Amino acid sequence: MKVFATGGTGFVGSHLVDALLDRGDEVRCLVRDPAKAARVFPTRGPHTIVGTLTDEAALLAGCERVDVVFHVAGLTAARNRQAFFEVNADGTRRVAEAAARAAPSLRRFVYVSSVSAAGPTTRGRAVTEIAPPRPVSDYGASKLAGEEVARAAPIPWTIVRPPTIYGPRDMELLRVFRLARWRVAPVFGTGTQELSVIHVRDLVRALLCATDPSTERRTYFASHPQIVTSKTLVKAIHVAVQRTLGHDPEGGPLIVPLPAWFTRAALAAIGGVAGLAGKATVLSPNKGDEFLAEAWTCLPTALERDTGWRADIPLADGLDETARWYRQHGWL
Image 1: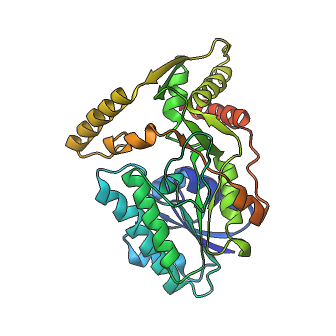
Image 2 (image 1 turned 60 degrees about the vertical axis):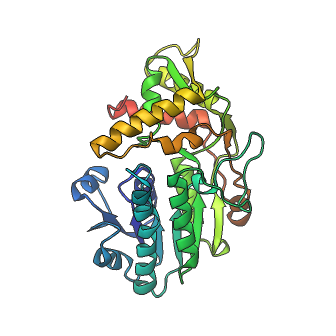
């Protein structure tokens, strides 16, 4: 199968490309930095096309006569709302347009969205695909706009919304793993926020299943069925890190609750400094409602029903593997 992937050198994209190569697909990747692609895929690799989501020629070359497009690239941190929409919405439109023009036999356009596009829910009420989306951040709104672009495109599409993703190569939760070395675990609010999570390899299998005929023109959540609180998650990360370091994890970490007023003040300060420096940060005032929501939980039952997919990597095993990978690669 011929495949074009955007974001192929990123966290999720690199694992997706590995899986595609493992099964013998012909893979093309849009990359901004060829040197990074060589580092991510040192012994084998996809055919790389150098460009960005604004490069029409590169997108057309990537999409030329492919069977499937996986649009994984996106911004999770940006300087302002406009920057989010330029990449997550306008970028999606450009990729979809290129696919419509250059891939006449396209089987599927798979858009990797986010649970942030759906918005938060309340404790004990995991969201499903039929719930009206209510994003509470610029990031979530831009991912929802990307979904709307995909749905309007004259191509067969499937949208996958993952929750918190973890696993080897992840840079986001790495901060929490590093804090766990010192037996410290900050949590937003009281630590009772409920979360759905998914290991990156389980997500990759979900993305591959999203090319099945049964998934056309459908939107899915892809998550592990286990729901955890933020306090439970950071404690589990603590155990994984301490075991990896050869230490006794007993006693647990020092849980440091960050009350709402402190969280919002800290985000305002961090966002202000980043803005003055002209840098993007995920820790912006706009993310306060995300960090302090009661729950970010979703049900993967629709994807399970339609494809037989199921997330099967237990949280403890996945966190142990992630901690070991960080340690082996000098990240921890």
